[in-house]
Every structure is written in C-alpha cells, then in structure tokens.
Length: 344
Image 1 (cartoon, helix red, strand yellow):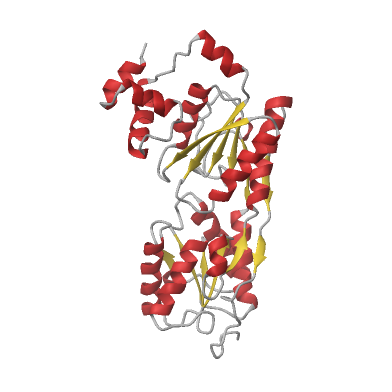
Image 2 (cartoon, one colour):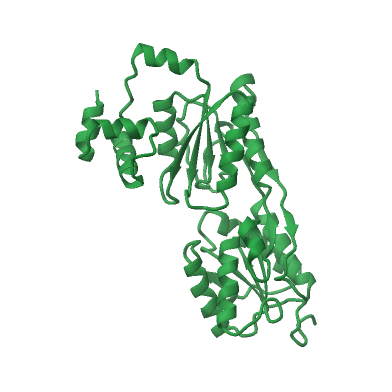
C-alpha cells in the first residue's frame, strides 16, 4: 500500500509538504502542489486518517470546489457566492484552485478522498468527459459548463450553464439587426470541443438563417483565450479584411483585446467596427467605450449549482441539467453599420 512517505519520495519533497498540500494549506507553491497531486493520482495514494481524525471529519459537512482556471476573473466573484451558499446550507466549502490546463477530474477525486467530501462542484472544466470519469463516489455539479462532447452518462453528474450556442446566435443577430454583413468571430478554434466550438455553431446558424455566407477568413482563431493572442489575431484580420465591420468575441477579455487592436490599427469602435462579447465581466464596464456583452448571471449560476448539489446529497434527487439565460448589457461598442450598401 502506498504511504505518504512514498508520495514524498516520488516528488522529492518532505513528508510535511505532502501533508500540507493534502490539507489545503496556502503556504505551498502551485507548482509543488500540482506535483504532489499528480503523484497522489499516479501512485493511487489514499490518506490514512486516524480514528480520531475520521470521527472529527464525519462531524463536518463539507463540499469541495475545484476551480479550473485560477486566474480567470469570471470565476472570482463566483467562488465567494458558492462559499456563502454552502455556509447558509450548513456546509463547509473546501477550495482547490488549479491552472486552466490541469486535470479537474483527478484533482476533484483526490480532494473527495483526502477531505471525505459529501459533494463536489467543478467550476470550469472540460466539455468531453468519458465513461471512465465517473468515479467520484459523491454527487457532482459542473458549474458554467456541461458535457456536450463526451459520452459520460448524464445521470452521473449535474450541470448549470448558459446555452453557449444560443447566446452566440443572439449576439450575432444583434449585428445583423444593425445592418452588419461582414461579421467576424474571435475564438480559440472552431473545433476545440469547448465553448469556442459551441459558440461557433451559434454564429454559423445565425449567419445561415439570415442568408449570409460563412466566410472562412472572418474566423479568427487565436489558438487560446489569452488577450495577447486575441490582439494578434485581430491585427491580422484588420490587415487582410479592411471591410470587416463587426466582431463577435467568445469572451469579454478577448473582446477588449480586439478593441485595442482596432485602435492601434487606426479604426474606431464603434464608428468603424462594432464589438460584442460574452461574459459580463465587471472590468468590461470600464473599457473605452464600455463593452457591449451578453452577461452571464454569475450569482444564479453559483447558487443554483449549490442548491442542486445539496438537493442531491440530502434528498437523493436525480441529476439535473439547467441552462440559465444571459442579459444583454449594452455598452458603447455596438452601432449600426455605416458601410455604404452593407444592408442591401
């Protein structure tokens, strides 16, 4: 049987360091924490709690929260909302924050074992869970995403998210209603098996329903969701397609990077080109001009996720998959198309 000493030796760290990681102490670097948790998974280590620790643990009702994308500003207010909702329901929230590319399934499973959790919320994650990833042993809620590209049975988890394709459809239609015809989309990739692919579907459907052609050179693939990549992608777009009059961005941060790119190219938003995002980040209210965006209801997403999880824990409720709507928050980045003949 693997021991904590085996994990420490495998990682080349002290036993006390492994113990601090497993107990959620904040004084361990993210790099070391990731290394320890990877070893826990690879060695199949299960913490050996004493009878006293086990008895004490059973007296505490705990819910785990694994945040994938610790630097994502969209998640920051939601962490507090989830924590408050758990506390009001009589539960303690155990938080684990991991990088965007980390394995939330493995992290969540290890957290469930080490903390003897009663349930788990995954805030951010992959959209392609498989049948092999159904071994948490406790109720799980995916918050802000679902499993549209995977084959994991929906009975094994719940989800609360927006309908990404539908919201992208709405965003694209805002441009169409304002006379725009050369409408670009700024995304990671149209086949990323995540939000970009879903929102790309909505964009394409809106164009098709309006009788507009899909123009491949108006699809801006940043290859990630970082602002610098979005900026570079829009600079390239502005050079090759000076006739573009609108950009739908799959995130607010990418949209703000697009605005800066157009500014640096000598094009004004919204006089020369309009921009719409999806997220509703607080910071996007303070861009110049303020970003027009489809704001996700962060408080509702958080509270509904906790409510579903507790209903499953306490009453054995069946899994649920809920879509919540966004609200169009009008800023100053959308204007009628001024290009001659664009609406013909």
